[in-house]
Image (cartoon, rainbow, N blue to C red; front, top):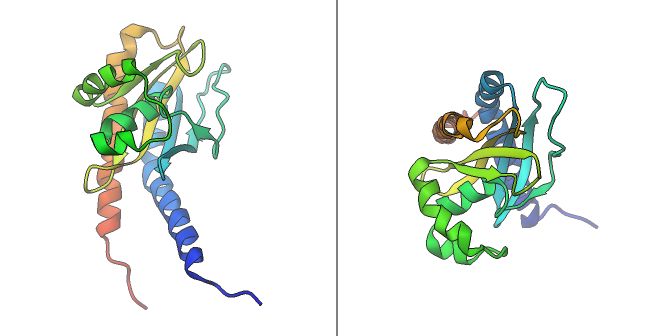
Length: 187
């Protein structure tokens, strides 16, 4: 015989977190995609791993080949770098992936700017900017990124798009906190 046990609560909580982040973030992601006309991703960060949670495609023909549900690299993706920069030094040490020395030197810049850059490190020909989505304690729970081919996203556009992504991630973080503080009505 089978019975629902405590493990089911863990699965339910993981599903709830993913669903809530996705629902709360969607209008902000849509605005970001419409403003940039480029591919926008939402990531979730769970148990030290990064996963693509949502993707809004660019209206252009040349697009990214990412897929929702796939694990992403914490050290190559702009979203992953932004998450690493948001972690405490102790939490960074606990990550399974090896963090290269050059990324350690980038962390201070990422923290100062509020966004990270993937300059063709994950995929040749693509440039991305990403920023962490954080909980009420400032811990990363996910990230937002904008990705485009380098010919549509020259280096000169990085500061502008980076700021757009930073503001979007901040808005998602704030909305997520507000949502989590909303009491659930009891029937």
